[in-house]
Image (cartoon, rainbow over all chains, first blue to last red; front, side):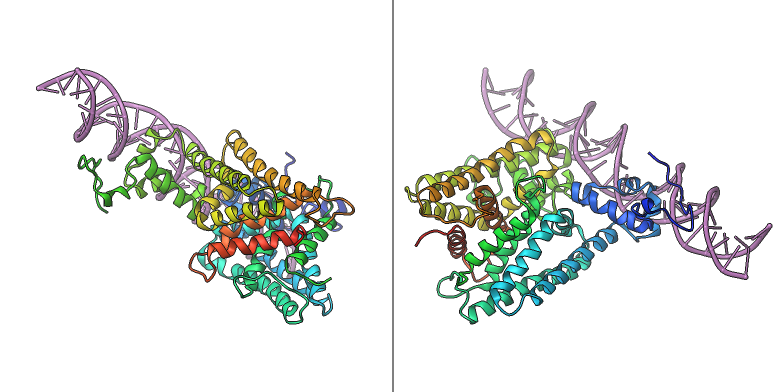
Length: 217
Length: 217
DNA sequence: ACAGCCCCTGAACGGTCGTTCATTTGCCGG
DNA sequence: CCGGCAAATGAACGACCGTTCAGGGGCTGT
């Protein structure tokens, strides 16, 4: 409702107005994020996004080449940060693969509880991307999976993990996929309103994972 | 390419032509199924679906009231059958909750490996449905979850399961959700081309589930 | 043989989409 | 104070959407 003049107001920008995402490009990103998460990329129109941040349709194209580029921008930054924080968590967890796995799960699950919106967008909306643009997202996802596979492999080699077999072989990739599916999709049903805190969720999922891979007590 | 006359051909319909899904309504369902799975409900047009089964746009409305009703028809039948086969599997597994859980996982996972398309549609496309139409789908999903919760509760009561705690309480609903997420999303990455058979997948997932809930050997 | 009916056709409708663009706005350095 | 420029406007464009409907077979029962 409040008309939004281009807004320069003062040399000292009021602190309250800080939260209004001053660079319009950030406002667009934020608005698109929320709308994509709530309703899905194909049904959210450029007009929707721009109205949500007090601009008109045409202004989008001063900042992004297309609606598609906007989505890619959003997903890529989210995915990149996920890759970064998980690798960092594992690196800071010492040598024990059990601690590494627990640290990974904790960061991953908490992130998917708290940033439900981002997780949802990144996981559900990739398919709308140009084939060319989706490649680097898939690469990042494979990289994250390989971190898990690496932890599992170390655990098996050191005799600390005793994962279930397929026939007479272990398929660490399949196990990693199964676990990641489980962790990723907390974002689909966890609500901060419930009785369980994010920290409790993280612990529950870590427990289940350690049990599933047969971690020694 | 091949023009498709209304096709009645003979009293004895050739066996080869059997596979062409004679009742057009079935052809529409099948075509819609595949297209929704591959590209997603909002971007698949009525014209796409009808062209895929050799008809024109308008013919859809001889069989369905709207595109929305078509999606609901597809999802509801898939979901209903899933509910049926899982309940049946549990009922035929005897009294031991470990056997019940294993039987449930087996049916559920194999179904999601083999009917990847259906599973994908049912799980990804509900959000496009009218709010009114989605209610019974959600009910069915809750029913399936409650079957799992029931099995877990029986296992805990009988001392055969020792699931991870949240604080000092068990939250069987959260555990059931976590497991179901894991089982559901095999449809997102399992490919029949790989080295693992559906049966092996089922066994792997059952193993992981039994471990996760702390089933006694 | 003919009526009746089911079903398909394909043009048409009203809307909305992503995107473009000429025009206007308001800030900035000098 | 002014010229330049980044950025917003909002009308316009062409395409395509879901849906409707008048018209036209070919089948079936009598």
